[in-house]
Image (tube, rainbow, N blue to C red; front, side, top):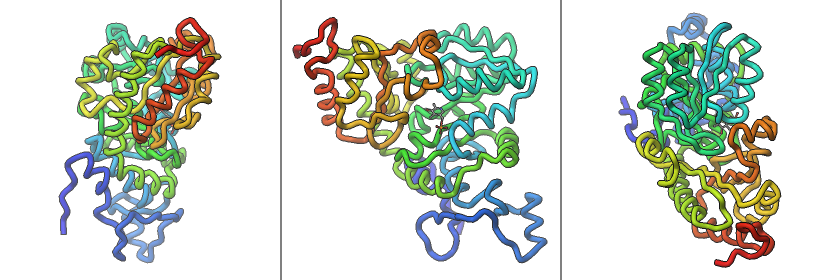
Length: 408
Ligand SMILES: *Cc1c(COP(=O)(O)O)cnc(C)c1O
């Protein structure tokens, strides 16, 4: 019997890709922990090899468990096709190397994820790709650089770690008038909050290790978009080999079942925490697109209809020493280089997103040394706020210009 495809995000995350589970009545996606798939009928094998029949031959190319993960994200992003990877960085690097060639120019923003930034600075110039870095919060500069001509526009929004917003729709319109391909890293927003393809981006990609999996127990990456571009990227991956492992795919599928309710909870927790921190005297600044004081709040409201995400950052009064004193006091947060998990996770850019970047370069990128990235989990927000309060107001904590208790 033909099953209709799920239409809404919550249903797509649960049921997507699961209509053809193997016989035997299993209700859960089995882990096809097999390198290759056997055929007694050579004609059938050849048809699969020639792409005339869809089935599996070798797991570096395709695998049934991995295919279910790809289908879920494809549906959620509203894409024609999707291809997965061993990690988010594999998804990003394979996309860039599959689509760019020597002599090409790429326009991007300064605030990309640290690993992406390193890829753009170290490895693309080696193949003679010219990379143009724009001020993330300056749409006029981004547009002017796109109009000078480029093969690709590479965006990330909200950005890591200062949560700047790039207007995808406006940027894509300019990019398309010059024939450039727009790629958007949607890791921070998730398809629950923001769907870049609807806004004109040609490709959308994720580190699935973050919100998609949501449990900090599996690495993965994925790129979604039109069939022709995805086929080009898939072909590059099938030969270079950064395929997603079936066991990791199983964990990501299991995590994705709760994607919508996790993200809704994280959106709500993060907004309450950002509002709490914004009025706290020990905090110099809060970066969260859901705050009305965020410089691009209006753009965020338009392009993130689902919510503003679970990640924020804030600047403590003081310097890196203040961060070193504050972080160990938090009880309900992992101090770790990760985000998007069910547990709250914190860290400074110096040891997390921008560990690859030198201190002077971080300063040039506008990342203060007293910045803390805070990825809200699904805990009860009352406990999280109480935890932040005791950590901020502990004796000896750097208050505004004092070393004593913050009187409040
Ligand atoms: C973590 C992250 C990546 C890299 O993903 P991995 O799965 O760690 O390789 C890329 N982009 C963003 C925005 C990230 O947060």
